[in-house]
Length: 146
Image (cartoon, rainbow, N blue to C red; front, side):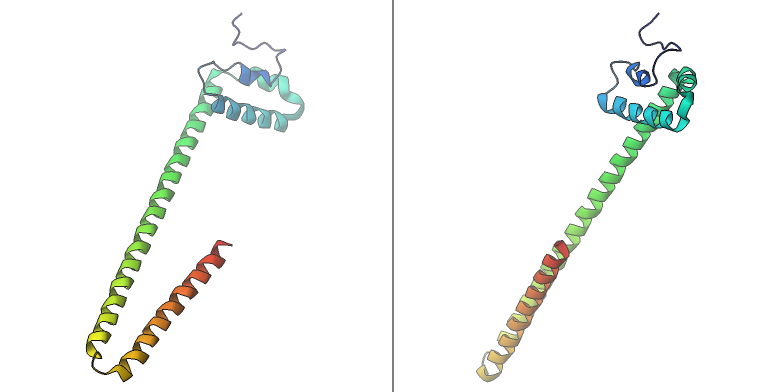
């Protein structure tokens, strides 16, 4: 009798041990978990269920596990791509806001360079607004992370 064949007296936990050696240990662990769940649901019929399990059942379970792992890998890749796109959008938004701010600052300085009575309060307003926006954004960002 071959070592991979089961007899009617074999324990259900021996079914995953009958898997070929070239199968990765992670897949063997998943098969063992599925078998133990199946055995737990069947109750007292463990020996009869173990006798009915054949190579096609194990192959089907392994194929299903392979498909599930591929699906998880695709989901992780899509999630990573989405996060990358989101990061790029935020980067360009920051660059655009910075250029607009520099343009407004330069425009105000050029427009009011001769009139210091207006230039100083306008620059104070612009810097104060910018610092308030930056501080509020930073506080909001730190609270979101908590």
